Length: 114
Length: 457
Image (tube, rainbow over all chains, first blue to last red):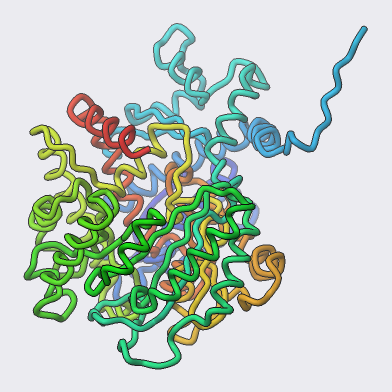
């Protein structure tokens, strides 16, 4: 689960349950926000909760709270799906690339007779 | 994409589905009896077995998409001189005055560079002569082509010769030579007279270029001249006028090309705003071009056609800006007038600002050291969209391309930083728009698009 709030300084504060969204997903979501925000991350001791603060960089335009909230909600689900797909297709992808780029000219083909 | 989701895979298949479809696929909620299940299976998005039965077929398709790598370095650019007889205000190549000394390639370097070119395994080699204005040293171009022809008696490659010229002052004798060797001309036309002249800071450039194009067409044939336009900030206000100027001058296509942040064009106050405006310009121009096609006139937007080939066909394209692994070295190399070899055209443009980051070595160096040397190896770690941050999860990964030189030039880092990358923003917006057309106006645009790619393949 995620909570998305704004604090009294206008910072966006996310509380992420890392048992649902691990660091792979969090990293990918936050990467696209780093152009506009200064980001700090802190794990709450003895819980699965990671608290993330997004502070708008100087000179960048403030985005409406509901817009950023909707974007973040979608992005977390989107990257979670991408992670599931990446994990489930990883072996096939490795096989596919190995097969596609194995230089078949280097192999000698034998014709077997019984 | 609004309420739709674009699904793509490494093989180039795509599906555009309602939002939430991916979640259903991941949750295994699509039933085998549903049409969507069959579409997903047929497009290789899902498999009913741990190893797909058609893995060999899939591997062949992936290899075909990357088969441009078998034609390693097909485009060889020879920067013959930095001198120019136009010196336009936005020149990306930092050209010099036509009387300036020390800006021409040495003959020995030219011939050695041609020897290097023939070390390339590509069956089809393109020799592109650039400048400045290369026709200022047409004697050297002639020597280069004659030497390549002589070597090709043994090499037996398919040769294409291209001269990138402003066409302003090409002599009859040189055109006779070009006719004999099937040379094609690539020239620059920015649009209608007022705009072309304004972009170039001249009062008579348009008339000279149009006269030059007519002369080259008369000598070599109308299909031997193509033109490129560059979209200056002023051009952004004239999408229809620019397309019409191309039509009026007998062209059947246009390549809507944004400014590159190199050379004299580097001085721009706000690149993100420029690229956002460029995308709107592109959309407006493309919509107008589609209208023309609907009325029966076949007129192609070349950048769209390149992207469409990647979306709608299993084949790769030769356009170096949309390749992964990147076009630098794999697709293109530059032999510069200064006696050095650079990874791309943009790399040599950086060198004019004393930045030699993408200089691979001297023309006199060994082929292996230039094309497989330490610098090439360093670049190879960051030149595939499949493995760089921001691109590796992008739905447009197999359509777009990696460009370490552009990253370095605009962001000071060859690896690049996608969240603020203007080229990422521009390419994503354009590719998304093309998908949107394919999804929302299928019956109207698909026949036109298929005509474009079958005619230009």
